[in-house]
Amino acid sequence: MYDLFFQKFNEKIALTAEEEALVKQYLTPKKLRRKQYLVQEGDVCKNICFVEKGALRAYVLDETGDEHITAFALEGWTLGDLSSFIKAEPATWNIDALEDCELVLISKQAYDELLQIMPKYETYIRLLMTDAYMALQRRTTYMISLPLEERYLAFTQMYPTLFQRVPQHMIASFMGLSAETLSRVRNRISNRK
Amino acid sequence: MSTKQTIAIIGATGNMGSGIAKSLSKSNNRLLLFAQHLDKVQTLVEEIKKGNPAAEAEAIACPTNASWEADIIILAVPYAAEKELADKIKDVANQKIVISISNPLNETYSGLTTSPDTSAAEELQKLLPNSKVIKAFNTVFAADFATPVIGGQQADAFIAGSDAAALQTVSEVVQQAGFNPIVAGELTVSRTLENMTVLLIQLTMKYNYNWVAGWKVLHN
Ligand SMILES: NC(=O)c1ccc[n+]([C@@H]2O[C@H](COP(=O)([O-])OP(=O)(O)OC[C@H]3O[C@@H](n4cnc5c(N)ncnc54)[C@H](OP(=O)(O)O)[C@@H]3O)[C@@H](O)[C@H]2O)c1
Image (cartoon, rainbow over all chains, first blue to last red; front, side, top):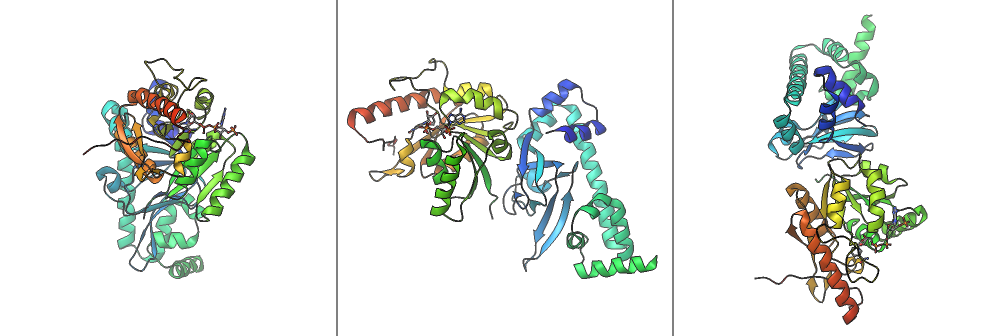
């Protein structure tokens, strides 16, 4: 139920068996089926979620009701509407399951308490947030500075497993492109070779 | 928009379980229903969907899986079955709200089998140390779910527990079921709440209330 969670935790900072048992007391195991929501826009995102199994995505809806994908999470990744989680304000993201999922949730209360009582948890969160920030920095740079073909290649290198796992129209949305544009970009790249 | 909650009802085919399931199926909840006799659960699901085709209710064959998938777990089984079920759901109920509705009545309904310094809810909390056990629904009768307004008055339903956010969530669930929720205090207040039901049962038998009866606190 928590295998991958603790594997990833230990990759960042090693825990003793006792420390693992302590962290475990604060975790909420949760199954989510395909198309079910972890949180919907307007509700507070009460949990940060780690994916043991399955895949999630986050999206926003624009004025015309079109979806724009803002994030994905596959096995071993962490996802949540962070502003909503930290500030307890209404979420702007919708997060739903692309496949049947087994998740490990951490509530705000559990998160705050663990940060208080366990320096190693603070280290884990610092490293997690640093990684997430660096990924966001790279993604933003690619988005605003690279020509489309290079952007596509950079994204495939950054998220190799994701590109095999989710449908192309979602990848297009995540890259801020229409599905038609993405398919043209892919054609141009394959013609290059 | 509002994110759907998933509620597992363990013992869904009983007097209480089916009353709770039918009431909660009318609001923004997804219900996972379990009891040992799965055919009866299936019949209940059909009945719920016949009354409300949009209801999300599903029979589920394993209490552990139901609880793993749930946000909130309602144990609607006899008190005597709670230990066995607590063992089965302990791991997957970690950090979750578990609602204790039971009244550990003796055979003549004249008192409780638990000792005065504890309650069914506190015993359940001992079995599920990392869950948020909340006492609720134990002070209303099963038939009240069909008529939560009795003689023009909405029945009160008392709630006890120690986690503020969980109390808030359960208050909303109690309201969705048609009752007026009143947070009575810490989980130890369950001792009083369980005894209140002994009195209500005795009054019901003495004055022939026909099992439609409830508490109402008058106040200004
Ligand atoms: N009746 C009331 O008005 C009332 C009022 C307040 C509180 N309560 C409390 O509510 C609880 C349920 O009472 P009830 O009157 O609804 O009882 P009930 O009609 O006998 O229902 C019991 C339910 O639990 C299931 N069950 C029994 N043993 C089980 C086990 N070992 N494992 C899993 N499921 C089991 C039964 O189905 P299967 O046999 O198919 O498993 C059934 O769905 C009790 O704790 C009672 O104190 C009752």
